[in-house]
Length: 333
Ligand SMILES: C[S@@+](CC[C@H](N)C(=O)[O-])C[C@H]1O[C@@H](n2cnc3c(N)ncnc32)[C@H](O)[C@@H]1O
Image (tube, rainbow, N blue to C red; front, side):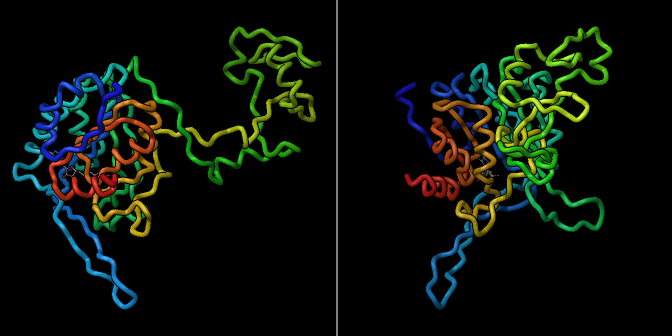
């Protein structure tokens, strides 16, 4: 769609979706939403006008949105259900919906999503560690994480690209061997344990007969390029160099993405702002350049900002005027 124009709109997302069905229907590769989640809080945007050498500047606080629901959980779930239903037909056949919530409602929203998308199209419950310092509790435990529920339109057609997190001290530990190329760990190339009891054939390779897991040609290739390690008793293993491993494959537990700190460049003062790194990971693993990404609860606009930077087309809206003007400011439009 070469004539596509990225859009940021003010209004209730239900109206926005209904009014833009013609351009969105079946077109969106990724919907990420971070809606209100029955937290019982009125949220604000806090900004500080620049001071001078003598003063720190004045603090301004503007109301952004209320997450208080007179009708409680029931009203909230009805609000979500109708909007989630409206979002589903917008997705492409290989599209996905990522719903960011927390313990207040995640289990109820999961049941609604199972109803709308089908239980078999549930892909993951991602746990994002959103703070290092949970509030002290008089009973129970302080909450430190949010939940992102991931659904595919059709789980059989949906694929995520492998994403990696940076190595840490623990993941580097197995790479305890070193040669002129660098640090490496050893990978088994012979069948072990339960694999051995299967009807696996043995063959001889470079003087050792064993139930190898790989073909002779593959072993030759590794042997000729210095990738085979020979132990003192003559057993072979494969070297895996730390420098060849892009990082640690990411699981459903996301502990390496930090919340937006007051001092960071991306901090806007919008109280429920999510880190750009979180959206970078979601967009990187579930879309390709030029795909259409939508976020119907824009807030400070993190999704649109990251999608734009990653050369994706985007569509976003919010029912708070303060949020819309902040997104425009962040996008410089
Ligand atoms: C948790 S914030 C989103 C934060 C965002 N992910 C970010 O990184 O800044 C939720 C947003 O949903 C908006 N909102 C609430 N009800 C809405 C509705 N019916 N339609 C559109 N936006 C709505 C609020 O104004 C608020 O900005």
